[in-house]
Image (cartoon, rainbow, N blue to C red; front, side):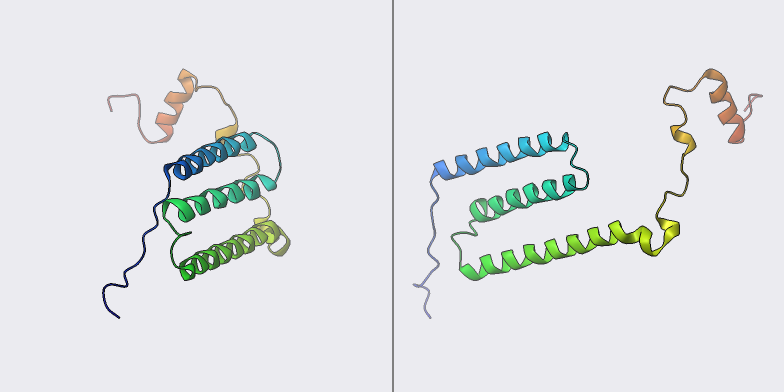
Length: 140
């Protein structure tokens, strides 16, 4: 094979880049809007689906995967499918974790002390915390 059979370059029109850029911007706005909707466990699924669509658009058009040899596209799609499988298995694990080991189904502490008061500490509480940490008010 000689050097004359070089890879043919594909020039993408500027309209395509602008359209993909606009689509990525719109999908980003949709992601932010969906984050304010209470969908329960589906929030993660919707966010990951939008992120996968955005990543696919970037890979296909900005990285020219759509115009490259088709084996590269097959490799990319295979990698995305395996990533999706691993994420789904991880989600299954986190959902059923409490059914297998009951000690991990609940938080370690039901109510942590850091959430007791949402206001700023009072002057006396600051001095008490210094005394607890080993510092005293006398000359240290």
